[in-house]
Every structure is written in structure tokens, then in C-alpha cells.
Length: 507
Image (cartoon, rainbow, N blue to C red; front, top):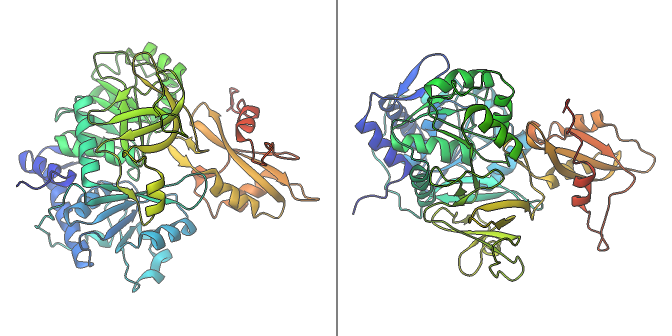
């Protein structure tokens, strides 16, 4: 029986087939081939094995975006490890939780962050370093690891931390089958081939940048313009040489703000994808009017990868919708209390079933069980409806999750820090519309007796504890938070009250 075609094996097959083809095209003009990348993967794999990584061990990464970061991901899969990418903005307090919970065998950090983890050495954890230019201890050795661990489809491949609005962060365990099946479904649906040249300006520590964009390139033999971050001018300069851009709504609002976005600049492009946050229908329409290209929106989440997509061909890409289920995936809208499937057009809880759905939350069997229906459907926590064409529309979230610029922000985490400030009696954190980020964070606080909270003081207070993307863009002081008869804060009322906060031209 042939080994299961993991993402790593598919990449290695492409490297053997086209070793001299460019995989990474870098901003400084350099390129790295598939063959060169495979050698880097083997070197990192040797280092991981020397550090004691065995199949099932976790390898955590908090580093800047680089080709070597992708190689670390592939090397972890090569030796049977479980890859744990972490946002570079996480603070020391946040990192402490992830390390304690996941218990990685190896932690790879930027060289300048190594002193922050010096006290962890000798506790069963090895700390390696990797810089944006490939420097650091991870690539010091020249030995290569030639063996490839034969993983089964159900074996864990990665853990991505997510969270609800209450409780501690949860590690979603994604199997090799989850990653490979979802990648194959996207390749088929979006007609991705070795001829594609992707503009990659996303981070590589979450689903969109790593398990959608990078995986599709790695497994098809395509190439990518690999950018450290999104810059509208740089992306506009690359459009005439590219075929695909995958981005968040912020990318498109910023491109629309540049006169260089024209039908001529997009002549070689065949696909613009938007996800990770809702794209305003007005931006969808404005982009099509300016370029002749309709942006393709899709719907996914940490626990499932991608679930639905607007059609590549054979149907309209409808603004405000996220399309139909991907091949092999089933999506239904149900009554959240009974689980009964609702007629098309009615709003209910979105549930998903398929090979893309994760295996469970890391070391949380009770939580895992509570998130699945008896027939195996995963309860996403999102609310939506199916329209007359079978397209899914996301109309809200059962949870109070805020998605700002493609990043998930969990209000409870911010509220706990704000409530610890001596001038704050209590707080409520909400998401409101923002023209650039889709949503942004607003904190509504009630003063402690005889206190007057100051926005600048509160933001300075939370800075050491929370990543920058979680910081509120506005703080509003109120006498009391709106509550229902049961005493629950009515966040929907707060969102309505402040929905126009960033609607002006200076937002």
C-alpha cells in the first residue's frame, strides 16, 4: 500500500519532478528552487531529530515570515512531528500558556527572543532560533535527514490555537488527512496548477497563509512571490507577472485606494480570493468595476480549513455570500437547539461535515464532544442562511468573536485585562465595522466609584499583556452596560450604538 499522500510527500514529489523550478521569489530578487528548499527541509529535519523530536511530538514556531519558516513546517511533517505555529505578536504571558498547554519538544523563536526563553532549557524543551534571513541555530548543522515518517491520514499534523468568547484557548488538532483533503478540494475548485504564480502576502501562522495559500503552491509545483507583509505598491507591481492573489478584505480596500489598480495591471491575473473576514459588498462591486475581476469569497475556520467557495466558473460570484460547499464537504443550517435542518432562507446555526473537519481540541475531550452533533457534524458557532441558489450567507456569529484584518480577537480576553485596572468597574469589548479592517475592536467601560478612566492610560495598561491587533481602537466610558432581565450584557445593543464610530472619512 502506498503511503498516505501528506502535504510533505506531495511537496517532495514536486521537488523531485522539478528541482530547478523557483518555489520562492523574494523581494530582493533572489529565488529559491524546489530542490534547494527540499535540502533545507532535510537539514532542519536532522536538527529536529537531534533535538529529540519523535512522531507525535509538538514543534512550536514563533518567528518572522521566511522561506525557512515554511521549510520548518515541512520538516516537522517529514519527521512525524506536530506543527504549532504561533502569532509573532503574542506576548510572553500568552506564549507561556501555549507552551504549558501544548508541551512542545522544540520551540523555534526569533534570535532576539531567545533570552526570553532561556529558563525553559533543560525542562524537556529545546529552544532553537530562526531569523527572517535564515540565520539562527536551527540551520547551523549541515547534516540531512533522509528518512520520511509514513503518517496515516488520521495522525495529527498541526495544532492551531483558537478560542471562544469564554474560557481558555483551545488547540484545534488538524490531521494529515484534514490538510491534504482540503488542499486537494481547493486545487480542484480554483483550478490551481503548476503554471500559477501566487502573490503570498499573508502571515504563515494561521490557516489562510499556511494551509490554504502555501499548501496549494507546495503540492502543485507552482511558484509564489513571497512577501514579508502586504504593501499595496509592491503587490500592484507584481500583478502583471502573477496569476493569483489570496488576501483578506484589507488587501482589497487598500488596492482600491491606489490609482495603479486598472484592468491593464490585472491582465495576467485569473483569480483574486478574499477570506478570513467579511468583504463589504460595496468593495466587491468597486473592485469588479475597476478591474473586470470579481473577487472570489470563501468560508473557513481554524477547525475546518475551508468549507465553501463561490464558483470559479459556472455561476456568479455573489457579493455578500460565501458560495457552496467544497467537494467532499457538507454544510447545513439548523435550529441551534434541536439540530433540525431548516428550510433554505431561514437563519440558523451553520454546521459542517467532511474530511476537512478537525479531529478535536487538544486534551479537551469534553469540549470536543460538545461541539459535534451525534451524526458527526461540527457546530461552527456561526449563523447563516442558504439562498435560492444554494449559496451560504454568513449573517452573524453565535459567539462574540471579532475578526479584525483577518485576525481573530476574543473579547473576554481583553475584558479580563481591562477589568483589572483600578479605574474600571467592568468592561464590554465589541467589534464594529471598519473600512480598512472589516471590523475593529472597541472597549466600553464603566468607571469604578469616584474614578475617571482615560483611554491612553487603559491602552498603556493592556499593552504588555495583549498583542497589538487586540488593542481597542476606541474606548468609550458609560455609566452602565445594557443588560437583559437575566443580567447578561447586551452586546448587540452596544454594537448598534457604536456601529458608525469609524464610518467617517478619517476612520
